[in-house]
Length: 435
Image 1 (tube, rainbow, N blue to C red):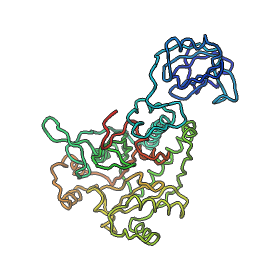
Image 2: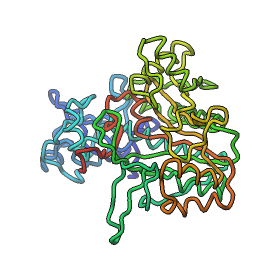
Image 3: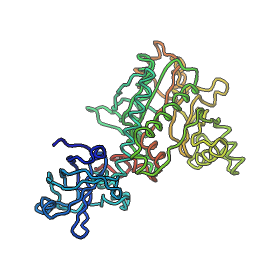
Image 4: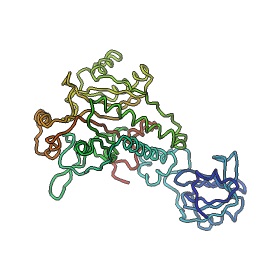
């Protein structure tokens, strides 16, 4: 008999069907046993009313997480989970499991501490709630690709082993590349700019690596970056408009295609305004001083507390979960950032704050070769490590810009999990290299 998914069973009431998956739970009440079968999409209850039906499990001492195939009659049962269940069972044990899992997976919530959850991620990622977050990540990547492909962007893949630090900082992982120093890429920034000279509009979904010694709930050292870069822009506001549509489409994708995951995680999707409100960096600092009495004027960046205050202000002033902060100081942005023509100490750049946490960084880039030489000189950086990158600008590049979304931080903020590691399949941080 052909196997069907647990999520398809409702359309087969009155028929005999076969499902296969993991034995999620087994409860015995009197002479009746309730089995819950979990596959890659959902769960289904099956009811065994005789010892003969359970015999295959008992003979092999198969406990929870055993892989089984269950054939049965689909019966409508309002009090059952999902309103349906299987009766008159024929059970086949495919892979028996006799050991107790390190963490119970058949509870609505995982009660173990985060260290235990991550130590045993090979098993705990099976939990429906963990799996739901990871599946939303897949949906976000699919939506990102679909939105940009529909706007004639070309997907690219760029090297993750590079000769120079993208951000010109020390927070890089150095490698021994056949006797030469090399680094894990902090971002695909240089390459996606170069490819604007080929395709005009490009994007990439791939890992990036940051050797920052953070030990916080919102930082990890390897994450998935959703990058976009495109040419012939007017300024950073052109980039912000595209980013707004990308975020809105991701949330629309969740709403239309991931209702089971949203219901399981019990959270409300945010609404993206038609136009996300924005505030200049200098005005944001003044606002913080006026409202909270904390003088952050002159600081080169926003602190996490600053971001929280600005998120509260955006919600109070505009009813918006989102806020663009524009015009960060040039001294805090990478050398390739385009300065504000009217206030050159500030940049044509932005951060997107979502519910009080920075979610996305982007902006307009320099596009003239002479400006790059001047920027490198100003930063006291040698030209040689960047020569292949600069070649694109020697031979003509249009005004361009882009952004990068950290997938795991996006999931963390949307779902409300307290730690970015819980939105990551197998996180890498200061202490964790396994599993």
